[in-house]
Structure formats: C-alpha cells, structure tokens
Length: 212
Image (cartoon, rainbow, N blue to C red; front, side):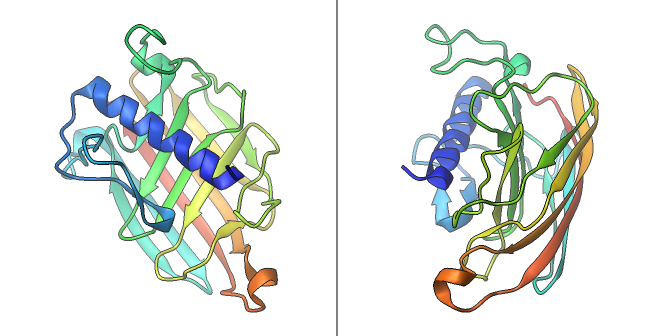
C-alpha cells in the first residue's frame, strides 16, 4: 500500500466510523480524489448546508482556479476526544488525540483534507502546523505532525505542496474548531509524465461545529 492509499484508507475508515457513531444513512456518499467513495452501506450524510454545523471556504489561484464552500458535519470534521468511544468495545479504532480529520470537499475531485502523520497526536488547542513539501509522486509528506491530501477537479494528476504550507487552528475546544490554511502546490507527476499542469495556491478558512 503506497503512502497516499494508506492515508486515504485511514480517512475513509475514520469517516465510516464517525458515520456509524452518528447513525447516518447511506443516501449520499463522500467522494475523494481519484474517484474514491465510501462503500455501499458505509455512506456519510452530507449536511444540506445546515449553518449550525459551520463551513469551509476554499480558493484556488494560479494555473488552476477553483472556489468552493463545503458544509460542516460528520463527513467534514472528526476528532477522537469529541467522539469518546472505546476501541474494541464501541469503536474499531482508538478515538484519541491521534484521530483527527479536517475535510473541505467541493464538486467532483475538488478536495483539501488534513490529518496527522502516523503516531502524531493533535491536542485540543489553538496551534500552527507546518505542512511539509511533498516528497513523493502521491503528493504526500511524512514530515512534521500534519499532512494533507489534495484533489483538483478536471486536472487528472496528483497535487502536493511544493514548499512549506500552514494549517493555523485559531480556536479548538469541545464545541468547535476554526482556522485557516495556505498551501502552495504543484503537479507532482510532472517529472513522470513529461508535462506539468502547473502550480497553484490553495487558501481556506473554516469553522466547524462538533457534529457528535
């Protein structure tokens, strides 16, 4: 399993777990980069723009341009201490500070997601996390405490940070999380394909309510 597949599987597992915890139906599915969707029976309800759950607004500028706003809910944010279930008893995985997912999902493959690197723990507190440049063709980096998974619709390539980016969490407590992020990204398959889809800057701001 490559790095991107491993992180995608982790994200999908987490979303499915949170969906089960929240008692969600499978009427709507979450699509991730590469056309990945949650399997039948493990779907996550996407909130229909419920303002009480918050939102994330993303802007992409440069050789690729896009803009979207994703609603909050169980498919958008997950944090172990918010769920507070015991692995092997009520949950298949540990719901501790090592479980953190922040998703900003747009149309098609437009997607920005953040999660910890392996064994990293994310405290429930404001903090600034450095997102290291991608070090492989999957757009991933194993450095630092936090990593990202990206998708830009219609580009048919993998994207990853080309220089250090930031995820700034300005508010984080038992009720909600808020902050901003900035990522300078590039087509990480350019050397393999011989052509590049270019470079872009992804910025976003989010405020999500604890959906549990």
